[in-house]
Length: 369
Image (cartoon, rainbow, N blue to C red):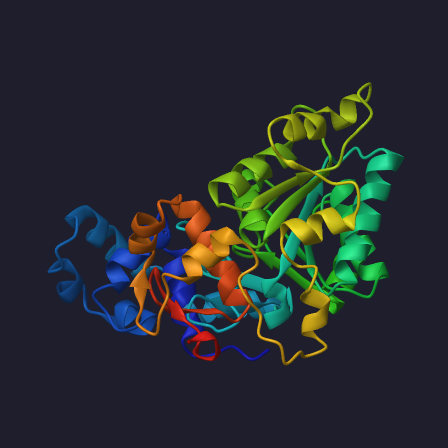
């Protein structure tokens, strides 16, 4: 995909050291676009009512970044950029307060990838764990739902392969540069994913597989998804870090039950004890996410989709043609913020609600009555 002119400026902002989405958003609030911010004279920036040290750091760092050279590095990696300004930036990631400024992508992100399920677990998968991840991924993918995982050995690989074998789509969120496949044993799998989904990273090309990067990557696995299924995990597992992010983000958590004598599945059983949805078959996931009807979406029904439960209905009733802020909905419904935002996303995916600006929603035109 050919790079768009605005993307180089987002890439520049992304490459400024120690400037994440919060700091960049503070600067962008004073400018019409990423390009306007990037091209702004130092004097204009230093007049802003923001910490002077931060502004000086931005100005100094900006001068050291060669945008054409940085764009060449992306092209050499065989990747494209998806920025917050682009329509194909994943809708669920937009909810995150620490969402990436941009994503490096090999393959394609599509509109249908707005409905994803993450499947994660141990790298040392037993045959049972592999079969759980592989089979459930295949059955979910057959419903037209994209499978997200982390391209690791074990459960991740089983989930990706299950989706591919079913003819579905899968996305690998990686904790390295887009040009560094880790582990190397999954290089062939990575190419299959590129052809039938996407490999995605927020790390610049060349980033090596450092341990500190993978917990950061895990928030994107859960953030990209409506829910997270732990197929097999011991009591101490990186998969549980993904679950922690999922809970913070208001995503659903699922776990496959395991033999009580199996150490490799003890983390799953603990999650179920703590309230994760026990998964005995794929229908448990579809019902909990209210996606049992999703395959029917491709059949185009004339019946209007309605809120599926009392919580969706309570939030939907607060919406009208006029935008309303999430905080107001929280106050009116007395529901937790995470519940309100995740339910609004579900209503948006169903075509019942629309985003009308930062943290503001209204009814979609076809649902207004």
